[in-house]
Image 1 (cartoon, one colour):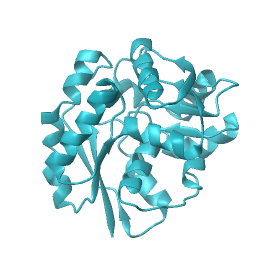
Image 2 (cartoon, helix red, strand yellow; image 1 turned 180 degrees about the vertical axis):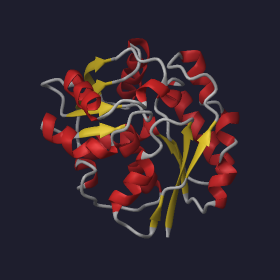
Image 3 (cartoon, rainbow, N blue to C red; image 1 turned 45 degrees about the vertical axis):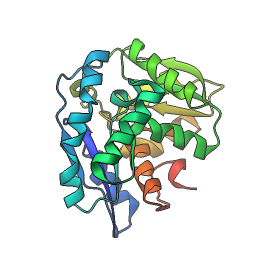
Image 4 (cartoon, helix red, strand yellow; image 1 turned 90 degrees about the vertical axis):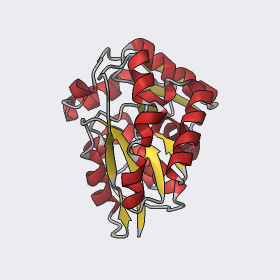
Length: 238
């Protein structure tokens, strides 16, 4: 049995995780999830720094250890890349020390997934305000990825993002695509995407990486489990 633990801020699109667990169709894989205290629900630098603080993340670690987690991923993009490249590394190092387990975050999941796809140029289609979306752009640049287009949607709260359905998600991806991009990234873990991955890639005709998808993939990578699955995009087909 392989158990990957996730620390997820608040309540928005956490139901993507049991959906992905089912789509993996691997009875020996479990994806236990613990909710962290979100603090202020705002895509704003000060709020995100507090949301991703060491204290808030450490509070959920013991429950994941008791669930048998072999690795832990901070399932939040904005409250990891907001710390910058070096700060995000420090965040996961401290998380690993608290957990006594390999650790990562959704921001690094995107960087690693882009590399795994062999994509050198990407477009970012974000729900965030433009200033926060640009910080993700900077993070990806630090990871060695060329970002040819970054689009923010001006949504401040995760609660609002969590209400978006298929039509809004596809519209976001279409609006954020760019002809030079080899992949399109949708970086918010508050956004439901697991049910729409096949539709997204069919619509855009290229790989699409979404936050909850890459977060699960990253956890499996940490646990050295390679899983092929239908419906979870090109990332899970290799």
